[in-house]
Image 1 (cartoon, rainbow, N blue to C red):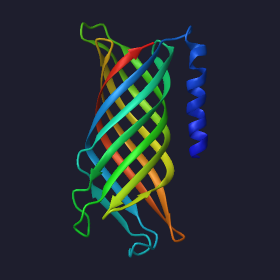
Image 2 (image 1 turned 45 degrees about the vertical axis):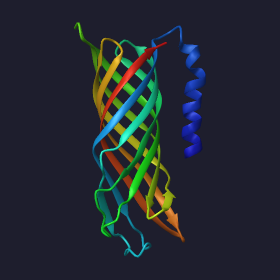
Image 3 (image 1 turned 90 degrees about the horizontal axis):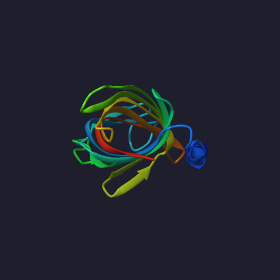
Length: 202
C-alpha cells in the first residue's frame, strides 16, 4: 500500500506542469498546533496485555509541519497532494505511569471546495478532505517501534486572508499496525489541529 500511495503522489507531481496553462496552482506551507490529540492502542495478545484490550492515551499538544500542492480544476474546486509530519508528543500518562511518545508522517491526496469572498481581508472560505497513508512511530523507555503504513483521513475547514495567509482547523485520523512475535496490534492517532500557513502562487 505504501508503494502505491507514493506512486500516485509522484504521478501527480510529475504531471502538474502539464496543467500549468489550464488552472491556478499553488504550494502551501503549514505550521500546526495539536489542540486535542489521542493515541489508541488495541492489543492482540502481547506486551503482557490480554487479547482485545484497548488502551487510550491523551497526548500533549504537538507541533506539526506540512507542505501541499494544489491545482485549480475550476474557480470553486482544487485538487492536490501533501505531506504532514507530527513531531513527537508525550502521553500525559499511561497505565504504568511512564511516558509514551508518538509521532506520525502522513501522505495524502486532497480535495478543496472553495467559496470566494468579496472582502478587504478574507479572500475565501474552504472545506478540505484528505485521504492517504500514515506511518506511526511510538517510543517508550528507549524502545522505538514503527507501525506498518495504514489509512490516513482528514477533514476540516479554513480561510485564506489577503490571498496568501492560511488559517484552518483540521480533524485527522492516522492508522497503523504493529507486528511483534506473530501478534498484530492496531494503532490509531487522532488529532484536532489548528494550522497557520502561507500560500505560494505558481
